Length: 217
Image 1 (spheres, rainbow, N blue to C red):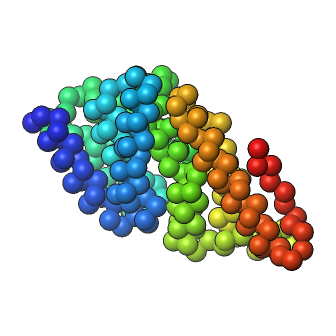
Image 2 (image 1 turned 30 degrees about the vertical axis):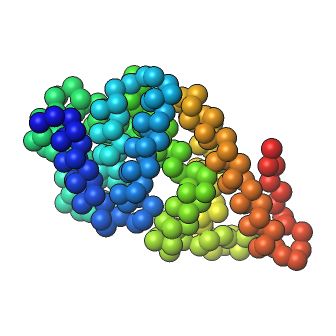
């Protein structure tokens, strides 16, 4: 089976595997990550495009946020899928490594970060910030029934909020990019989020002066 045919088979699997995910982690998320990853690879001129494309399409296999009891391990799923379509063992191992370590919440990291790993991770992180990142954050917050925002005076709720997620993760990602191309792309997306937060606080505390001031530079 040639590489184009393999990609088509993997696309079919990816579309099916994400049908029960929220719309911030659906097929279109995978497609955006793939496009970003291939764009970065083209400018950086590093990494194997075939591995990058496979890993982008499969980076959310068995995502812990949506995993159900009894699900097979991600490594098993990816191994069976790619073996069946004739992908060589070395490539399967790299795709599995990317799937295993790509997440922001993963405390471990691979011993050696390949260019393929760094590029796909950058693409995934870029899709978590900016205008689309804002939309995804609130979509997932609604999916989990999280609060939009919990003001300081109401912290006794001890309830997660989407605004808090910006400070725990999204605003940190700009400085966590692996490649120069992704770092440059992240600057504008980071600015969009900071501007959104300032507008959010202006409206939340209206007509009083906001308790928060965001440095937009």
